[in-house]
Amino acid sequence: MTILRFFCPFFILFFTPIVSVQAFTGTYGINYGRIANNIPSPDEVVTLLRAAKIRNVRIYDADHSVLKAFSGTGLEIVVGLPNGQLQDMSSNADHALNWVKENVQSFLPDTRIRGIAVGNEVLGGLDYSLWGVLLGAAKNIYNATKKLHLDQLVQISTANSLAVFANSYPPSSCKFNDNVNQYMKPLLEFFQQIGSPFCLNAYPSLAYASDPEHIDINYALFEPTKGIFDPKYHLHYDNMLDAQIDAAYAALENAGFDKMEVIVTETGWASNGDQNEAGANLTNARTYNYNLRKRLAKRKGTPHRPKNVVKAYIFALFNENQKPGLSSEKNYGLFKADGSISYDIGFHGLNAGHSSLLSLKNINTQGLCRSYTMVFFLSSLILLISWS
Image (cartoon, rainbow, N blue to C red; front, side):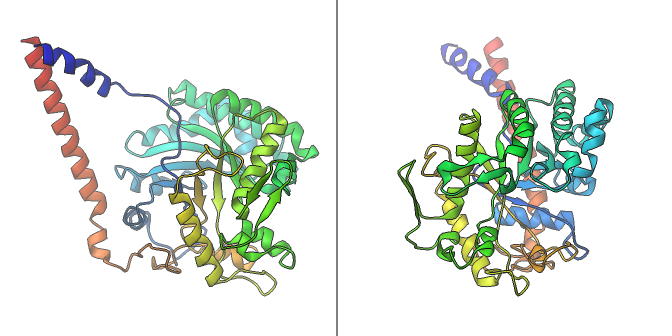
């Protein structure tokens, strides 16, 4: 009986849910964009992701076919509220509540929705009408999750481009743009209150393409290089991504938010581009994404924030043939439209052992059910013995 009394609190603790808002597990995730008419189905995407052991996924909407396909897979997903809906969500709390009910609550808990990204690259963007409604939309979406008792499960955030910064070189000099600051500061105050991170879309490839004559491509690609020295921090940087992340930390510190975590919500390198897009080729794309994967696997921080492990979502899962803009926009995928790899960084495409991979989702679901059944059986047996 003494032994059983000792174990009973353990089982009670084990079955008591521990609530914390954490949208990212590990260090590696991927953006699943779907502006294409020739990519694999959501069910096949589940197969691909599980075979690649990529658990963290971001989408740019809340497509129900995707959310249904992810049900029971263990994959953790951040859904997106598109920029086009920000005005409505900001002005109408009931619409925000209905949106969360229909696109988040109705899929939980089977689909592990862990976050809602409210807009994408709004501040610093060209649509100034959205700058003033972003905070209202974020608040109404958060209040909706709170009303539905999801606020301890689903994290609210928004992704920012480097355009929100006045200067990011050297990292220690970084501050938010004056025209952005009046919108950014109250947004950060709100995110600080609810425990959300600062989300950054960081592309060393775009920085290199903007000034290839003066930027060492090896510095952008995580390849051996002399790097840069930050005189204020007295720190050496051997790659540009770390420098971009620390620039974001510097801007946050300057604005009074030195405790806020930075998460990279997009980073990647195009495997093809127009003639005037320096560096956009397959060799560089493979080098960047291979080295990035190795760097994230080390689970280490940046020179300025060594204890803050870098977490990043790669852009993107697939090449997207219907994306507008420069040719590079269509060619960020780690995988081609047919599910084969764009280049080798250690993943396998759908055509590699395809039939065996397709059963992964079912195997995982069945195994999970059996595990829960066994755990509940054992706990019930122990409790019965203790009562007797």
